[in-house]
Length: 187
Image (cartoon, rainbow, N blue to C red; front, side, top):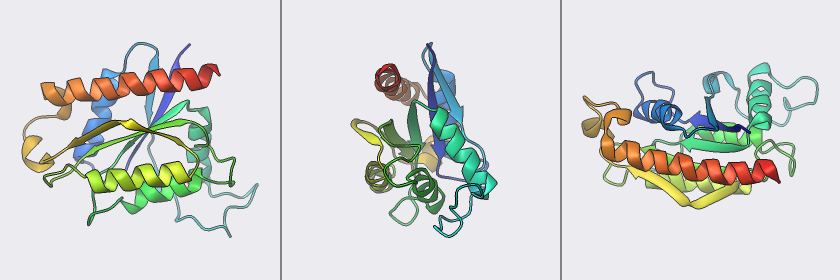
């Protein structure tokens, strides 16, 4: 049985180090894990209950929910913007939290990782992402973490997949999420 993990990247920049980290996760996924890197977070309108009406949900939000429904778990990649979670990632979590109590993220394992320029690797933003995902109904894996500091210099000439330490740590995160997601899918 293949376990589907939906990856959401909180940076829209084409050359984003978090995007590269997500690409590395796809490459490092163990056998039986299918990591789907979601495209289109930029097109999703800000969450508004007035437009979240059954039968007329905006197409980009419906596409996200459909991908999330098919997922057994989530891997969120969060940079840090002004000490907190990027709006695009928070918006995705908001859409996935609805309908209240039965959103596409409900009761599914969620791991949050990321990299940022600062000395702590975006840990504040990642903590905020864990908080939001947990309140939204996800089963946040508090013991599955990876914060990589100094992204601008560390990945200036090296893709995260080619950094042996990062690749090993990321492979461990993905393997652990795979186990949790597999248990959830089998239940």
